[in-house]
Amino acid sequence: MPSQLSGIFQTAAGPLRWLVQSDAAAFQSASDAPLAWLNADEARFWQALKTDKRRRDWALGRRAAKELLAKFILDETSQSVTYEQIVILPHADGWPIVTLPTLGAEAPAVTLSISHSHGRAFCAAIRGRDLLLGADIEQIERRSTAFVEEYFTPLERRYLAAAPEEQVDTLANAIWSGKEAALKAIRRGLAEDTRIVSCLPHPAMVIDPEWSPMRIVWNEERLARPMPALTGRWRRSNNSVLTLAYAA
Ligand SMILES: CC(C)(COP(=O)(O)OP(=O)(O)OC[C@H]1O[C@@H](n2cnc3c(N)ncnc32)[C@H](O)[C@@H]1OP(=O)(O)O)[C@@H](O)C(=O)NCCC(=O)NCCS
Image 1 (cartoon, rainbow, N blue to C red):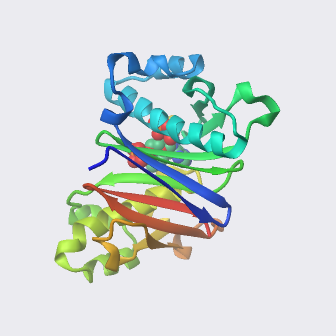
Image 2 (tube, rainbow, N blue to C red):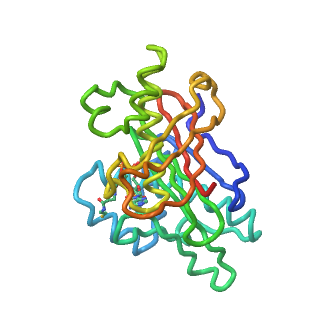
């Protein structure tokens, strides 16, 4: 299996570029240690993170995002940038903010989303500032009945109850991943109740290695304010599901 997978597809807001990378591909040698390619402000943030796992995940996500964005910037502006020139720092609420200080007025605005799970990072970017975009990766694992009852909507529970037994784990993780992607797209994450949104992955595609549709439906009964229409896509990659949510 390749340790890196990437692609691009059209959305209403323009081309969406995405990339999945494993830590083996991201950190190939000792000289590839995070500090070598982080900008000074990123390195300070990285050093202040509390655990080795958090530092590893944070660096893995940054490394994948910088690889994606370097290609993105080359395609969009014909300018080559080093990883150090791409600065990805978190907003106070956690979502990633991209700046390209060395490009000055030439710098394209970018919306980025990052996810990491079990040594793999998934990221996606669209040109433009403050767009709706959420990316999520989840390793496929058994989700307990208690988990489904607590976090899934009645619509999602009915959908899962009707799924063939051999697809339940994949679909349950796709639903959960869809929720995280949708809640990242509105930049709230798990600060929101996960039952404000129903995510319904196209079931016929469980074994399809390409992107498949996912319906994202806001649950009016639990919403305190209107939410933007989102389009979803999901796919399997090795033993994980990847999900994207973006403007419909
Ligand atoms: C967003 C969230 C659901 C992701 O949780 P997760 O499943 O553990 O992690 P994932 O690997 O899929 O995603 C993590 C990435 O989501 C992004 N993210 C974090 N908060 C986000 C938000 N509010 N909106 C959009 N994206 C967010 C970050 O890029 C983060 O990776 P990084 O910190 O390494 O840059 C979770 O972090 C969350 O709910 N955050 C918001 C609430 C919160 O705790 N706020 C305090 C932030 S300091």
